[in-house]
Length: 506
View 1 (cartoon, rainbow, N blue to C red):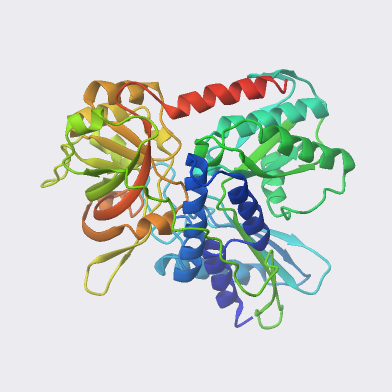
View 2 (cartoon, one colour):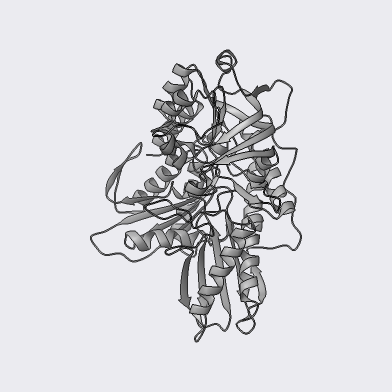
């Protein structure tokens, strides 16, 4: 199996950078359904361009490459210990090359291993089969959409839908609510895998396995196939749309599987996946470890996705360059498109916790500044400088307990992220004169191209690459005002309107 490690490295690289054929077709359909000059249309335009850029650069389509999860079928006598070691070596090499973001952190201390290896990481599931070949399937599911996974225990009351019994209609209500609760935080339009039955653990595994079905397949169970079609039709009336901006396409795929359960339990487990649906598979020769065949790739050549140049500019965009004045911020309103120029700082979960108890690193000035919720993929060059390989926004709601206080303490004027934030942050924006800017989730290459220089980094040793405070110089960085300094929130509006649509399905 001399080629096995390189085969796995190729699988990781391609899965990170190049979306499968069926996913591409689903996204192309969504692009065609949205009005080009709408918020949803601008979002899909940026997504389509980002997909092409990732292929051209052989770089992550989204900076959050998640927890690499492998499902392997192996013939009798296969050396699983050897395969596990080779997979770990391939994952470490992919991390070194910037194909994967270093995401493995100690559960308690948060210390990053730096190479995506750690306790039970990467995740590897081995299953035997009778074929004389090895099948390796990989899914890279980012933390933003992973956090929107949800599990229901029937019977129960479902918000907006009422009582859900232990029957097919109860399952339907669970699935519809799972789509609604994701809003734009899971980078819609998304895909869902659903596991009905099992126990709490096996139900989630069954749900994730459904994401290895093709988007365009037919469920062999007629009742479940009918449910899949019903969910797709209903979910796309919610008006959540791309990135939660409103629009016609909220869900791109729904796949449901079932397993036996014990009489006392009835679990419905939902694995939500973002539009950056990264899963591929390979058939490997058991003798030399080379790749015989790719799965989920129907064409040899890559179909170009972009229909334009990303978010189209009209000349009416507002340029924000730090230090930003309170007067300029208060002149903005929900729906305005802004172009961020100049200095920008990153700050995610660990940074927000840190800054509540410590001062800024020496020499860092954030008054009137811009804080970007982003965990970039950054490579260190031979000369000691840094190059950003991927840099899309992370889900902002995790910072809700801290954000208003951080805005006040650091004198910030703009927060950039995805999915919106809650009432405490909205109140803080109004009180302190700041805005929330929604960037396009998953568009890691689109935004990396806007970062012209890395001027420094702080807290790298303590927090690791994704959580460190990076300092960027940016040009032409587009985003949309979705929470302004006057108490208005597009996210609250979309959530309220979509709840009415959900209630209509009850």
